[in-house]
Image (cartoon, rainbow, N blue to C red; front, side):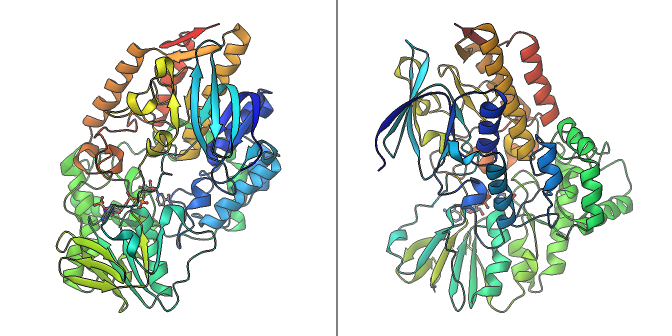
Length: 537
Ligand code: NAP
């Protein structure tokens, strides 16, 4: 515990990952406010600090999965490859913290435990687990959408005598797999990235799969000096395009249905994008894959065909073929050598729909068919997404209502930016905003800029308090639901819907309306004098 102190601030930022670092920079250095950021990790980086599992890398290309706010920063930083690994992204974020002298206003190794709004003074009192008390006009959460690790409540979990680790809370000292028998539970993006790397290091790897997943090759490659020079020369256009597109990628969308072309042309397009690798398979192929099940089936079948070609054992191949949800209705992973890893002699796939996990024993994993003795268990079991990290903090708004009470039937926000009943609280990439359906840095910068402009507007006009209007919030929640229901996203048991967490309300949390459309809506709200918000002095 550090010495207890009370500070008066303009803004408390919670988190020092991509969102928190930029928020601190923007509020402190651009607006000139008195800001302090609190970060649970012992270093900055958020997601990229905690997700150190083997094989962790970014699924968006480095030159656009990065900040755009500083021309100097983007010119001086050079990415090694298209899809850099976690250490390089963490180094980038550490560089940003250092370059903009952010660390002096970040308190590391500190969790914010509560924030209570005092209506009389229109300020928040924020408390941390290290005994700090802060009185602040604004609280801005930058807690990340995927940061509350989900450790499944499997009987006997704590009795395991070996090493257990979660991909999203990976030990900083690393985990040594050499000579070890390893169990890996979960085949989402994290499990799919770590499987090939662990398989190479460990004596044996047993992958426990509940739902097979579609994944497309990453095809990572080094960025040549010529490619880097081109990127640096063209950053202005690249960044503009990321703000003009639905998913925040700097590529023009394809205006073509899967049924606008012949079968041969369709195969050729899928094959070309499969060879190119990455998310282009989704947004560079056809524009109706997430709306039209028949179109989606074609992409899904193409991927299943590839799985059957790559995996030698036909029984294992069939187990790896997803059939219970449309492709893309769960966040699609991209991979490096995932499927071919199941051709290795030291790798086994266990389908836990066939043989459910009954318990973790002191020696390993017991399923309905028997015990798998292992030395290490890797939980690649995902996150309590979008709301988990926010609800860990005791946030109390008007009339003593907590955020947990307000969201007991699922998150409710206006634009994913504010919650009615919680004035002067802003949620960067909060539920109800495009957030996880976008290239995150683009979503983050748009939110931070909007909040920053809003605070500046309040200063200019003498307003001290802003709160989302309940009616506007209700209409936005309705719009978010309707937008999702018009897509195939509803057909999967995904973390987008909260289905992965037992007891969590089933509500589609991100806004599927697209980044550009959403930012236009946010701008329109400002043009209409912060329509849907109540500002007061
Ligand atoms: P995830 O996608 O939620 O996958 C979790 C996996 O664990 C699923 O296969 C799930 O099975 C399984 N699982 C959960 N609870 C289980 C239980 N009790 N018993 C057995 N299996 C269980 O989590 P993630 O892989 O960590 O990825 C989460 C998100 O983080 C991604 O979708 C992505 O947005 C982000 N991410 C990004 C990157 C990147 O960009 N580089 C890398 C990793 C993660 P079911 O499918 O049956 O629920």
